[in-house]
Amino acid sequence: MITDHKLVLFGAGKIGRSFIGQLFSNGGYEIVFIDVYKAVIDELNRRHEYKVVIKADKDEILNIKNVRGVYAEDEKKVVQEIVSANILAVSVGQNGLGLVVSLLAKGLQERYNQHNTSCLDIIIAENLRNGADYFFRELKKQLPSTYPIDQLLGLVETSIGKMVPIMLKRDIQEDILQVFAEPYNTLIVDKKAFKNPIPDISGLAPKNNIKAWVDRKLFIHNLGHAATAYLGYMYNPSFVYLYEALAVPDVYKQVRETVEQAAAILVKKYPDEFTLQSLTDHIDDLLVRFQNKALGDTLFRVGSDLKRKLGPEDRITGAIKLAREVHQPYGKILYALVCGCHFRQVNEDGNRLVADIEFSKHYAKGLRNILTKTCGFDEIKDIRIIEEAEKMDVDLVLGMHG
Image (tube, rainbow, N blue to C red):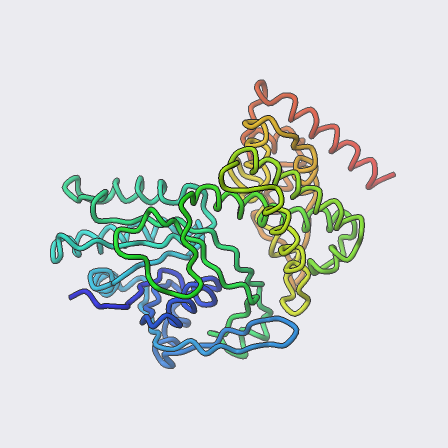
């Protein structure tokens, strides 16, 4: 039997708990978390609640109730939860999507066997461009050809704008379930994708052109984060926090000009959705939020994972490619990309990500190696971009050693 007001949420991580779980719990839903981290699942089942600490001038503690967990390896239970869910959501990060798709396919098939006319909406709470296309393609591979995916499944893309910092070890040891987050609490969703009525929940913001809003998140918010990390690190490698970097007028000015360049690109791409003024207002708000000292967001968090963040469709390279498509300048964004190749920030233990150490080895073979193999630029078609970047890189290196 399908249970009213029950959200099955893949991912009991920071965004899952602080944002998606919080919104739906406050909206009167039971939240069933599915995760591979057994310690968190066990604790959710012991307490049936957890706290979100909203970091601002004064901390606010929210107690999120009516929650439980299912261990992702318990396939039979996961399938049962999918069969009886009123709505689903996914917030696991790109590395966990393969397992989620596999479990979803099994659960959806069993749900179809039991309730063959029951539609189900899946909120894709991932920083994933074209997320609905990804899920459609991957589920289609694993579901039987008789499963009517177009009729029964609503694949709802989102724009996730909430900032959740890396927590220190002492905070996690104090309470494995608590999570820190900023006050921002708006979940932008694809209005057209729902098969069932859109949940009447405070904080949901349905939009008709979700592609535009996903791009706004990626090419202003995520790009602004990356630019702050990379430009801030180049200015002073000992900076730890975003607010330290943005307190430097030159860094602030460069970051702002970078995202303003992206804003002009978005207005050209989506003239019916955005105005330059609306995006400038958004940039103003973001730069204030980035400087939230209570949140304690770090350059390490927003800058690390270079192979992904400098990838072909991600926040920096994707913006440059879109600029080229709509014939807009991209030089400041390209400069942030080149600075990213020099990013060597460490975590609280003094360590870099293993993948970032590998990235640096590839960069040591030459910037062109990164531009073609990581960023996906074509050595012939994109030669102008490559040569511009190489000149910037030479100037940067000379400046570092000059």
